[in-house]
Length: 316
Image (cartoon, rainbow, N blue to C red):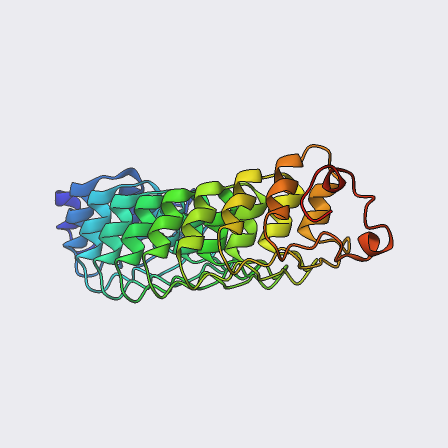
């Protein structure tokens, strides 16, 4: 390599006919650090020249293959653009590394001040933080949030879900904990598709610790109903039979147990009363003085016909 690049009549940017990759792309893809160094000594080597097939730069290939040494060498060049996305999926090197949990590569990329931590890929409209949060990569999320310019509330383009919402739905406790340490994280942001909060997703799926962490934030509103069915977190937890989640929600003094959903016209107490497996939940919902199992239209017509709530329950 050294002998060849010393020749002035050699063009270092010629791509091969089969893969349409330049020598620098091939070396970066394979992690050949010394070869990359030798090539970059040539002033006429274009470090941003992508392959002709997929439009992926040397930095993109190095990030994808987790060649941290090559990534660092490339970024030492001030003319290397760390935000160049590939033509195939519109993914930046940071987006790729974040989704795959490559903490070392993410950290190196973010050492460059001009690396944009909020850039979304063009295919899915997802930011690096969104991708890492959904996959449960706690370390990557922590590294991304160390940058003050990382916006933790950017929703993805397809379904308008925030990183916190994505992590809460899947029960990624570590990711939720890291996100909630940022005071600028809004725990009440709803997704545009269904109008559901992170607490709503966590409650429906029975993620007890995630629910606990969300409720520890005083600014978390436990009564926000989704726009699709107008069901609150308590309604979703009750309907799914998550007794411990229901208990936790009811420990919040401001949780309203009487909200009627528009899908079934029921309150959480009526959900519990009509299911023979939810006796424990029915008892919990009867404990508050303001819980009225007869709020929904069906109970108003037949107030004592809901099964378990008529068997020794206080107030009936």
